[in-house]
Image (cartoon, rainbow, N blue to C red; front, side, top):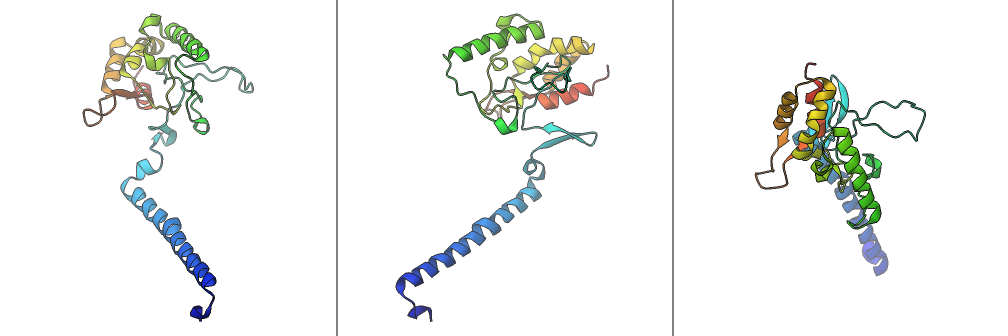
Length: 210
């Protein structure tokens, strides 16, 4: 019967059959197979590397977040966030660590607005952490490309250690040792840079007796 159809109709039917077959393969079978393998072999990673503590979700090891004090006026949307001195702080974020606004500022290194923002961050971080402005590390001044970086440099973590120790009434050596225990080296010994996951460090910090 199909052979008696006009050639254009046969070509369209063949294309339609191919469309349906590829839709089933690439739109149903392949996604289900990949999802199944991911859930079986990489369950934690496939579900967002969610971190739970005492039965509650406290964040993701792959996504940065802020550690701020509660708002003085919860109903005021314009109230500026206040970083909590008892916790290590992440690097700046162009999107305020909002996953829906992930991204960089896209400002060049000579942009006057960026230069001004960096200088203001230098003053703010130095005052907050009680250090000389020249000792503030670069990642405390510049936002990451994703705006959701979960890590900071060991230099920035150590720079915050004395402030955290003072705020929590702990010996500085205890907090410095905690930072040292949470420094991750280069992947495979040569990829990337040493780093500290802020969420993991703050979770360990919160578990210390005071």
